[in-house]
Every structure is written in structure tokens, then in C-alpha cells.
Image (spheres, rainbow, N blue to C red):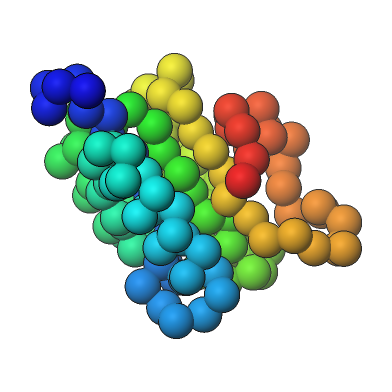
Amino acid sequence: MKPEESLRVAIIDDAHKTDAPQGRAIQRIITGLKDYGIHVSEVASPEDARAAFSALPDIDCILINWNLGGDTPERHLKTARIIDEIRDRNEKIPLFLMGEPTNAPPTTLPLKTVREVNEYI
């Protein structure tokens, strides 16, 4: 792949630099993407994500952690708002929602958000 054809991915996850299982998993994803020559922009918070939208207009896809900031309904609402903001700016960009396996019912994942997401990780 030529440098000018390199894909650019933004990962919005506040645990990607931690030594927890989730942080290590995200780091493996980042390393794997970079090994394929994909440029990865790491975004650590909802506030950083909002700032990054204008600074990273050439992003080809976005991965966002559903549990950004914590696994609470309030935090999920903030993540849903970020997804809405992403779609307001670009309704066609591939959007991947990351989450951890759980036995709990997905009561905090609004149908509107499900419709805005292309795939789930």
C-alpha cells in the first residue's frame, strides 16, 4: 500500500493505555492495525473525541468503546451522544462499537445507537 493510500483509524477508548485486560486487548488491536500499515489515532476521552473530529477529517473508520468512562447508564448516554455527533458530521463513516461480553441484558444500548453502528467488536 502506498503511503498516500494508507488507511486512518480512530480508536476512542479511555482504557487503551491501562494494564488491565481491556487495555491490553485494545493495544493488541492497535499493534495489529499498525502492522498492516494502518495509521491509528488514539483518543482517550469523550472530550478528546470531540476535539479530534475537526483535527482528523481524513479518518476512514472509527472504533468506539461503549463503556467509555465507565459501565453506567449515564456514561453510555454520553457515548451515544458522541456516536450521534459522529453521524451528524459524517453519516457514511464506518463505525465499530466495542464492548465487553456480558450476561446482562443490553438495556442501555438504545435502538437509535444500534442503527447508527455498522459493526460490533
